[in-house]
Length: 457
Ligand code: 5GP
Ligand code: SF4
Ligand code: MG
Figure 1 (cartoon, helix red, strand yellow):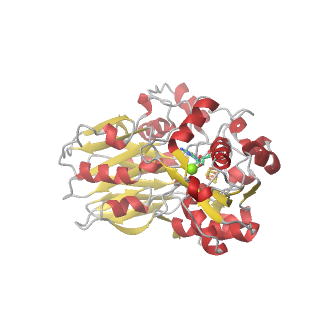
Figure 2 (figure 1 turned 135 degrees about the vertical axis):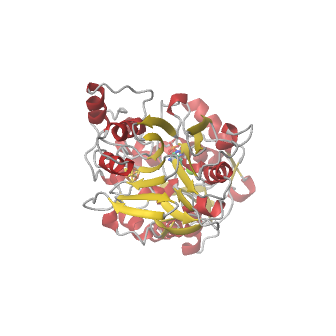
Figure 3 (figure 1 turned 90 degrees about the horizontal axis):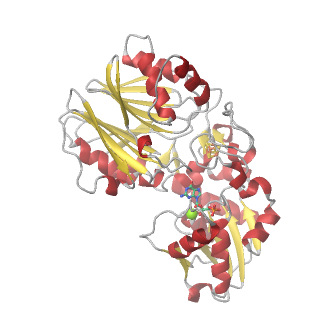
């Protein structure tokens, strides 16, 4: 998901949140929304689909309050439910509160059972609703203390933006799985955003990242920071650098574009494939492919063209429909690939569907050999922290060896970046500070009591 919050007395808040969410659209396409205030009440404007669809009839009018937040929701299997749209707005004993959440909690079941026993009722299946319930039921005197107390009860991944009628809050979990940064507007206001590309989009200047375990309170007095918890180690999600974040963002001091170029270089060092051209699976493979081409001296070519009007193809009910969707989304430039030995670079193999179909298309177009390089190591274990690779039986690398995957997708050679190569590529994040759990099973927190099939909790 993507989150955004603005505190500014001069800006047209709804319009700026809309633009900011537009820049974060890659973090979630299922639904989205904006929460605004007139200085008394909080109102939400939410809907299914892309931000441009949700606000197809126009962006909400300014309500006069100095603060607003927004959210884009990432599609997770089976949760296509209009009730789960964020921001979530509730009445608490301390007044109205709205919240937008990026990440996944890992102790949801325990907290939910405890709240159920205490008579809480829930309208959604979102773990975010647990957070607002905890805040609402806290016995602390101030909203700030209530939020921080609640943060010490939840576990897992959360980057949050919250608002009351006059204050903006930001929180990042003690491991810092998901990004969250602070920016400044020209008018002297403040922005919280999942990625720096959203600051750029609305013309705000990057100030700093919210620190893991940090709580920030933003109002007319400026930013007040409190460290509410400290984790034994930081755990930035490595998949943000591989695939999820936009390449023009900088997260925790690491330029995402540079990290992807480095991944390409590392893969060249690890493979040294003798080939005629390097192509990428657009768009997610582009930067690593350029990195491979630069390091190797093999020319980069546009061997695959993406239809830019086509939505995501990731979740489709059966193999036939997935194939059709990939064919619709990607097409081969025959004159580029014919008779060539090709290095094809993509960011990840999840089920193996996309690469299998593309490989077939390349061979049909006369490619001589296809050597595939993947800038994520084999994804063998589910993610419990907000990336939708939680259904373990669908992860091809959880049951197939590299040789079996190579056979399955039909490429002539297959290489996954090594974990060491990945660590070197994300050069500004020390390796002990990076989460690699979906690759190496080293979960930094207790995992939810999911059953062996990896069923969603
Ligand atoms: P596969 O076909 O192997 O199941 O999926 C691999 C493709 O899905 C890659 O091209 C990768 O860029 C893309 N991908 C990886 N993770 C995600 C995700 O979380 N959402 C979407 N929409 N695509 C993803
Ligand atoms: Fe990111 Fe993988 Fe860790 Fe999930 S398990 S937070 S996808 S590195
Ligand atoms: Mg892709």
